[in-house]
Image 1 (cartoon, rainbow, N blue to C red):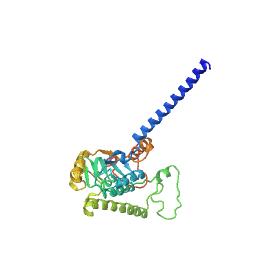
Image 2: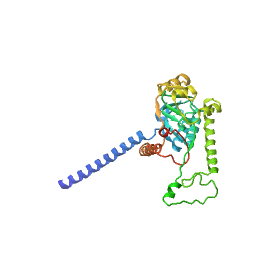
Image 3: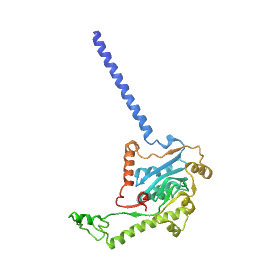
Image 4: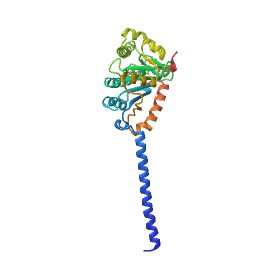
Amino acid sequence: MSLETDLILDRRRLKRRLNLWRVLAVAAGTAALIAIVTPRASGGLGRHVARINVTGVITEDRKLIESVVALVKDRSVPAVIVSIDSPGGSVAGGESLRGALLRVAAAKPVVAVMRGTAASAGYMVALPAARIFARDATLTGSIGVILQTGEVSGLLGRLGLSAEAITSGPLKDQPSFTRGLTAQGRDYLNGLVGDMYDQFVGMVAEARHMDAGQVRSLADGRAYTGRQAQKLGLVDEIGGEIEAREWLARERGVPVNVPAEDLRPGGLYDRTLGATLSGLYQSALSGALMPGGAWAIWQGSTAE
């Protein structure tokens, strides 16, 4: 065998080894990224307080609900902190997260920490907590429901356009962007909003041990500062997570040195690209006209 042939064979072996190491390096890097980004099993975390971050516009999130409910049987989690910075969201979204938190609260202590804003559905998800903390300047309350629509028949008329709707009943197209509300339609929608409002009032009355009439006197849609809300009985204490941890240690025997870990629902996509897209969507949604449906949201940008 010639020297040139030996050199060629050596180079091929070297390339194969180099490619193998490259593959192993890529695999190790991918595994490390997944380990960092993907939610770790509770057993891997050890004993910890679970922190549920509720931010932006609240909508119904199946993966989040499943992750919250799973905390009920997680023995490594002695307590849960619900950290809220949200103007609210859909009534159904707030209701679903509240329901999941009620399950957790029946099994272990839950505290709510209100940050900048915890209004409407953002206040709703705080209700299952055994103790609600807010900053002096937190904006909370805004207990109520809004069903917003629009009507452009006048504009269509100016443009020489018209719209027709064939419906199976007089309320099927109420509300409609191409036809104004009828008296019957307005009564019907008022009934829907009124029923959801009654449900919200009932949630507050039950959680805060208040008379329904007392809650209604506070639930005219207005927001309160944390200091005002404490005086009205809507929150318990002024403070943040530090005060919440001290309360858990004092009243529920969960030491402050037990680390707090964010609950991370979903997989790799949800924790990276999915989270980014969701944040962009929520930012656009909170700054735009609300879509159809009933919402429990504080519209601070349009308040007069």
